[in-house]
Picture 1 (cartoon, one colour):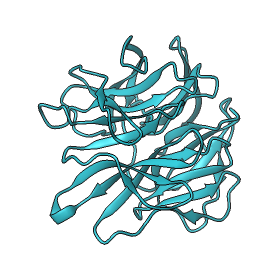
Picture 2: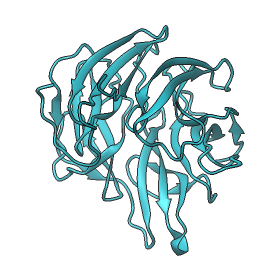
Picture 3: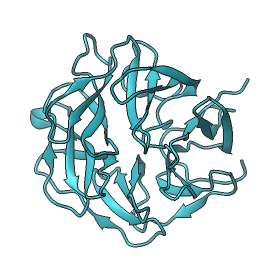
Picture 4: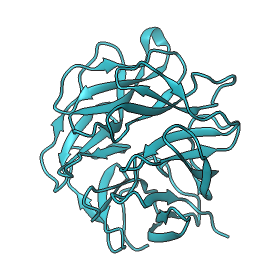
Length: 297
């Protein structure tokens, strides 16, 4: 509670806190760290030694056992949002900046490298996934052709290069993430929605073909994250009628198989935006990290 993070973006309500938690597959929860400011989007490092999260436009790391967070240096970038992924070898963090671009940062901290491209029309990059071989990043772009806001799935080489469009629809898509076998990209979308906001979980082949819908319920489902062993998907489920992925909602952390079968609730808590925007599975596929935002009792 005494650790001070930079303040930027949304603020907590009086008495509200951010709780970085770890949960196992039986629903047993443990609080790793509690903060008076907003912290968001934990990743687990591939070696299992660190949780990486965002706070106030910066990145921090902390042991899954607790302790004091350590700042990860990102020289020249102090406007990072909560979309970041680690390379499979754990040496690089790929980040999204509020300037609309993607960058690579050494996990140890240091010089940054721009990855994304400049576009003649608005094309704001939000990173979500990395291929198992570490060669390709999956992201969503907010585009505004002729003033119409569109959010679609793209890929780009992790070393930089051309953008490849995978979806081209007018309804929102988000959270694209590779399966561990590299055969699928999972994402949430409103492409089957009968009313605005009713996002469900889908998957498609990595070239954008073969789209399959995996959830069909009345709740609003976001951010599918596959376990490293490929057995399970964790996702965030909002109450019916939710628009987007806002903070401060009574949400469910749910599990299902990669085909959408065997859905079950793992935990219920107050959260939403920032809870699991990025993949937060432990390398052993037995635990997840997430952020809850409890209100004072």
